[in-house]
Length: 288
Image 1 (tube, rainbow, N blue to C red):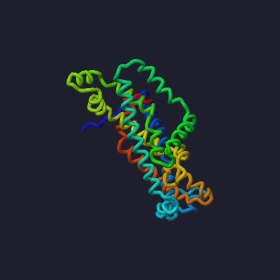
Image 2 (image 1 turned 30 degrees about the vertical axis):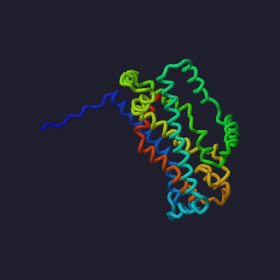
Image 3 (image 1 turned 60 degrees about the vertical axis):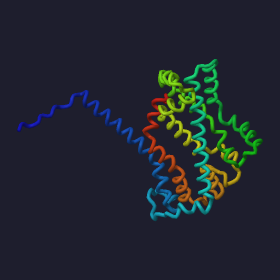
Image 4 (image 1 turned 180 degrees about the vertical axis):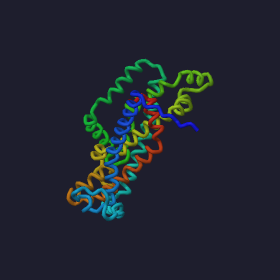
């Protein structure tokens, strides 16, 4: 058998290999830096107080304390707070998907007088700072006697201009021949929206749903303003008040990190299951 002859790399090939090496090194470094806080949180959830504040830094606990996950239940109504976050996030996500998809369909597929101007005005509300709207919305909710209620937590977040924009961008990519064919078969506007457009828009809908769920799950300011009772608080608010109630020097950091770990599990699970749709939806809806 003849020996295999290896050709030396050309300068261009060597340069490409070096570029790929540094590119992969940069990506891996970014991934490690991004993952470090989550790794620290996970390990801290099993540490005692001495391990958390030890100097030099101690990554792994000397004794793995699994009881940290039970301490938080004795200090705050964690299960009720957790359920509040689930109810608020799910209801707001479904509401935003409904209102935004209907509005996006009208702005993208129906021709009516002043459509583009109306859409620009609606999209311009994104530039209004959240702080400007807090007091008017609070006064409205207060007059409706919705303080410390689920409807007070949910209803103000049922509309989203950004979600409408993303869905509109996707709906505009669907050929209008589908609408014309459906009209010829006797379908009305709502049937076209429900049976033709929405099934084609699953990636965009899942992207908007995931972004809305994450925003609702992590929101802090509005529950802080509207919820004075512990039973109606959401997770971010309950965890922050847990710190301020006991003071920084008396906080059970292991228990707090355990509660934080449990609080981000739904986001991690949902994103892990839907990441392919999420990436496709971002690419197709025009979000850069």
